[in-house]
Length: 298
Ligand code: NAP
Image (cartoon, rainbow, N blue to C red; front, side, top):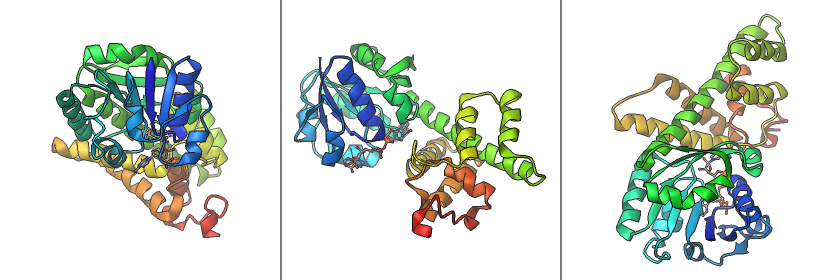
């Protein structure tokens, strides 16, 4: 099967490599050249349009804007190989997923929303959870490919926007977990309880979930290399807010974590892991000027 791949960032490079390892012929395009060279075994596409000359093409660009610019504005749907299925694994807005579904239908192409749960190390080990939604025939056509990227494909029905809403809800809830742990630390450290001991307590009793396990370690170690960049997480909180607005709802906890991430990005931490938000809360928000975390602030 000939596969195209667009966007070889932290996630995309790991995913493209797994498709190569599974024996597929992958033709990949990335805006900057350095990233293309980082994935052995892929054939480099000169133009993004070349990646659309395939049976299936994956897109792992950062956001709605990048997909619109690289794919829609450049007319790639009109020149795509007939019968192609386009799999968008980026975290995009619910509204944009609906627009993509419609545009692919008009162009006679398959479209599947397949955002993923898992950070780049999880992508590298082929252990992603993949939230897939789209027409049954389109999902069936690419399911063997998804199997080489993740440990489980969660089929969420024929409406692609469902997968995107579910992904945004998951990220919103992880951000809330990060902030919840930070606020717990504020209270417990104020009376001298070590944060590692506090996390051992909560993980062993009430909060044994994956998000708490993984981010409590980062908060304890103050290790904020991404991972998932704060600027992308802020994008997701904005998209979740927009999805809420579409149905006339404001979600108060979402507002709080969006504000926290916005402060982190404004303070110059956009390229750090999103768990830096916890550090800001613990160190009293704006007072954070941690030289080891932000060299620009030395
Ligand atoms: P990343 O490392 O920043 O990669 C972003 C990719 O998009 C790069 O290939 C970049 O190209 C490309 N890009 C951005 N703007 C572009 C434009 N205007 N034109 C052309 N190319 C453009 O991000 P990532 O961490 O891989 O995340 C990618 C997507 O996966 C995002 O939607 C993110 O929300 C989602 N996601 C991330 C994680 C995670 O933990 N990192 C987990 C699940 C889902 P250049 O190399 O040229 O900059």
